[in-house]
Image (cartoon, rainbow, N blue to C red; front, side, top):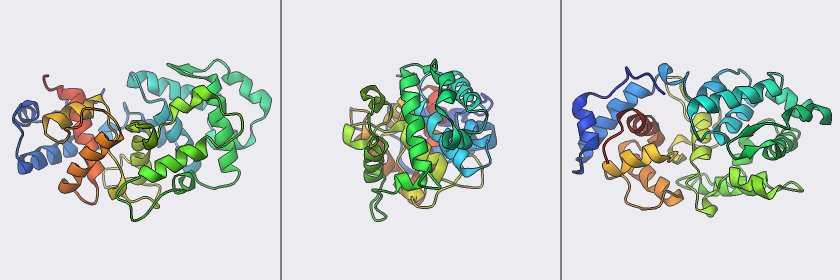
Length: 280
């Protein structure tokens, strides 16, 4: 959990919990204050993004950022522990292990488990990473295959990435559920979170801003139960399903608050949803 000392003032907490739709300016003021509270270095240690911050090299950050994001469901303490376990299995050097491991080196991974993600999935991810990094310097190129600079969001980029990720021979059917895509009606929460880490940058130093091919204004909110609950309270979400269209609906509202960097409000919505837990 985040440091509980970072809490919204009571009047703003009450506003986020009200059944009456706040005004546009009230929403902007509340979310801006919440971003200021939660988008700071104290956010990093208990959050999965802390795994990415452990590394200096681009490829290590990409590999462990992607892997950690894909494992990011359940308790955050468990997610962090599993990500650290993966790092240990790769001798602390993910990129070097991906490129240079031998078949015998993979045996140590045969008992890895996190919820429904198991060693079969892990070995396919490893095969994909070796395939990609033997041909490209950065994982960013995989997300630019279908990206359209004039498109308002990353829908086609994520659809194309999904097709590319599962383009190798002998794809385990079970593994396809671990990498989502808009065409599969998913909100793509974990992929959108990964892209936030890679693309966004500001003076707070939480997100890393490693990639430039996708613009911050094209990012889509990582939609989970916490973000959904607060967004509905604030009138930012009317759609009943928690899917890609719901994530886009929230993001479109956030673009009215900040056209250049709408997903910065992920810190506010997530933080308020986790810590404040407005009533039902």
